[in-house]
Image (cartoon, rainbow, N blue to C red; front, side, top):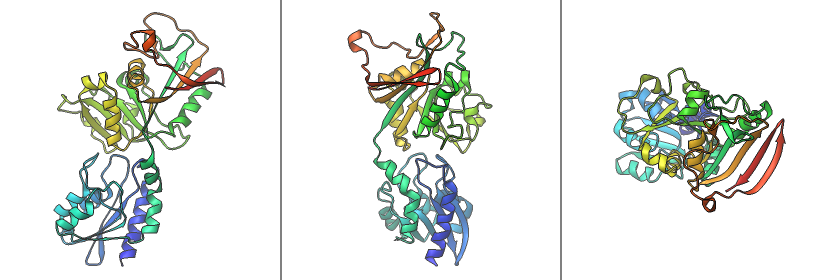
Length: 352
């Protein structure tokens, strides 16, 4: 019977395919009196874990029941509270998990300590296939890249913030494919408000997680970034205590931070995203966001698209804004530069 219930959990986990990365696909069933009383799975990045989804559906009936889950329950605070704690509080009698989670950090010991009987290894070979990408992702080192589309005179928008479209369709298609290689794409609130982007792959592959630095939670409810095409993380000032209802959706994660410190130290943003399991970040923001990222010393690659256009004007928006380097000696030095013609544009790649 154990295999029967674990197989059901594995089938549930598959429902999260293409929606939960870089998290693993996880499925869960709760069994009582030889009958499945609740089912759950991880539906999208940032949503309830499979165990919590199932426990919520089971309610008080979870008392004395068995829980079957494809991956060892988590035991740490991240986007969601630890599942191990919820399992204990729900009164689950026995837990069966298929595969050990390298990030579980003492989950089994916690459960046993609180009187829960724990069994592992049920259909482990089948369940391992669900977390193959997750295990590979754990090995990846942090990678931050910059993408900017500019004119010959280094402008990314006019003084009225008009920026559509600086580059040609072929360049934009390249960027859509590029996004599929990253966990997340990051912009600031100005880009969100002026361009109203989708920040998806536009059907070129899996969508990245969308990240917006929006100090005052100014994104309107009709924004494309709030539509359920892919999960969205919004960083906002921790001084804000009340959030509008249009931000309270399952695919939206609100992340309060000290905005003043984060603006002066972009590493705060990167480190916070790492806590969320996001290791590869493509920064597509405006001049200030790009500058902050570049001078954080965490950027590895740059992708600068240059179109054969000139905007001019001292008030038009530059690709790299803010204060920048104080002297030429402190200017960032780009290495390993390559040039590629894409349609009518040039793509300049390099490393820092």
